[in-house]
Image 1 (tube, rainbow, N blue to C red):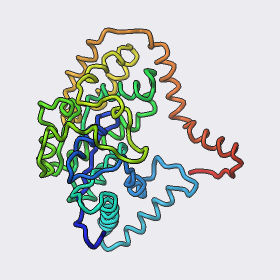
Image 2: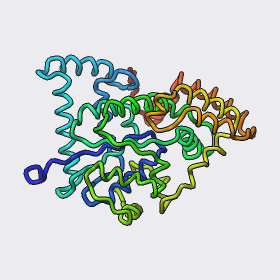
Image 3: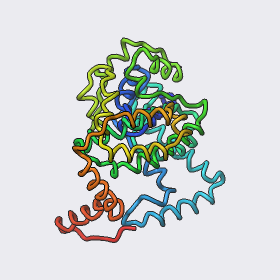
Image 4: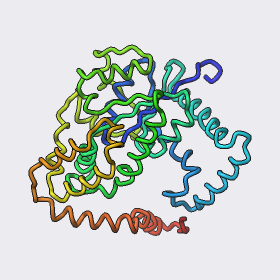
Length: 329
């Protein structure tokens, strides 16, 4: 295949989770020139070779980072050589996964948000689609989808803080090389958002074909099934649901602080207005049913961040299975 097929162009769909990326992926994949798979995730460990924080491993990840950085310093082109080799390997894998006919391979992996800047730098000829959503709706969707209505945002603060900041910085760095759309426009066909994306990609847009996104299937389990099961056609129904989810005064207070952290400039890059979002949040009538439990779960979140019980759970599971334990650093 490598000797016959033309080089493939990657499309990276960047967003926070719960922003409509699976829907957008399926709509784009209705075009015969775009191949995709559920969620490859393949670039995260490669770019984390040079990131010290956030990885606990038996092989001492911080030592790996030091070794890789020293190795890169000895390359003729330094970091650029590393990025080029990663890019060429990944594009070969994309081509193999796509087959010989597709011109593009669409990679939609949720936590690429935190390495989006590195991807923009490493893939100069790729296409980048930044998908935004009202951050209040994202928070609400985290709560409803993975918390069954209970406060669980401590599990996603990495995404909401590190991820969002990285996405905005990457969008600014990409400049005219990238295209931005928002979820609210994607589900409103009259907005022309998807037509703009196809135009950016240099592909024809067929509204009737794009509506058949329900026919797009991918193999494997690495993709978000929620919207796939719930929405069989474009619907603006989820647009205002966040107001009910966030009606607790405790949740509203947390969200005010978060919006002010995001700030006017970042929200402007995303296409939203800080004052308007704050006004919409303040206008929600307070409902106190969950307030007490919200406080308890926020305090629990402090303990989760401090002690990371998932690591302990993994170690206990290994003890139960009779495995040997090693220190992780």
